[in-house]
Image (cartoon, rainbow, N blue to C red; front, top):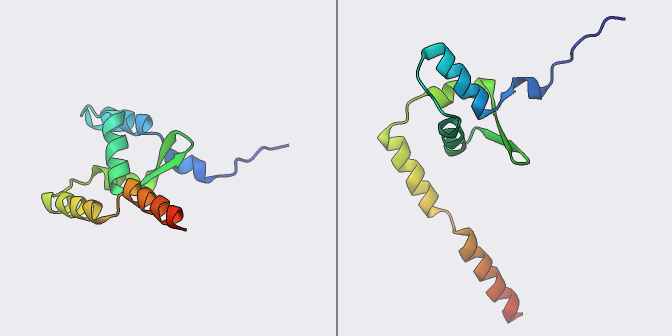
Length: 99
């Protein structure tokens, strides 16, 4: 009986440690898993399963792309315009207390 492997979505996901190891091995540039983790989270390509973070292989080029000052500035502006979770919670509690 021959055993065939069925490709799954998990086959195309890597941990930040694996990505950092591959970048360091292929380019000689020392890259830490923490750097990969932070950028993946910042640009929105991180996938979390429990406490483990994974990044799709097809998202690695986005990780390697240099961020411009304009992109960072736009991200900070959009982040500051989002409602604060704690403020939203306080507002909901006040509303519930009035009822």
